[in-house]
Image: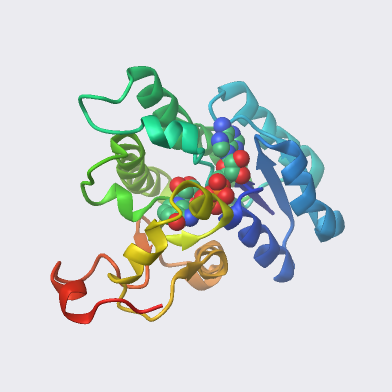
Length: 256
Ligand SMILES: NC(=O)c1ccc[n+]([C@@H]2O[C@H](COP(=O)([O-])OP(=O)(O)OC[C@H]3O[C@@H](n4cnc5c(N)ncnc54)[C@H](O)[C@@H]3O)[C@@H](O)[C@H]2O)c1
């Protein structure tokens, strides 16, 4: 069974649907409980909606306990919640300008929340002989940008957290990998950066923008025994946007 944080969002919901379609059971955990219920309800008995504030240790512990008491154990943790509200994103600017309380809030939810998910879930995984943790990183965790220093730094932390957890618990049967999406079209991205999709498309090696289902397929693979010999990796899923020379867009231009 799998616990998905930020399970009511675009990518989390697609992961929940994919894992249930493959015969799994999921906890859909989100700060927006009503939205989590909307994702869980059509999935029937295979899904349980749980309220989670990923910025609060007690809430993360309670989410893991709910999963264990409802489904009898936990095999997969998808740490995926992140603050994606435009109000916070607007303030997540540069080193000089970001309010330190905004920086702390972003790191608390987007990075410390992932550590605590691991902290509370791993003992239950080990008790069952192992498990698979998948952390949602981002292209933003690998490069600099003109804004979003808090988000990018948190995602960079997620990539190294992944390698530490993989190193520390691999011998106990716990694998830990990260997925690093580029721009994925979800309600959140369309709401917060409406003009970004057109600009971004110029930099893609592939002829379309990313979908939540693309990421869900990769998460499902990493969760499965098919990926049983993979750990500590961060896999980009970005249409090839970060793997080429910067002048690519000048030569090739717009796609979709
Ligand atoms: N969509 C993209 O282009 C993209 C690209 C790279 C990485 N990502 C990452 O993918 C993940 C999912 O993003 P998404 O695109 O589905 O966005 P989304 O906003 O649809 O999903 C994020 C979910 O996290 C939840 N959340 C926010 N704060 C929370 C908290 N304190 N506690 C519990 N839940 C909380 C939100 O309610 C939301 O449902 C995030 O980690 C995001 O950083 C997304």
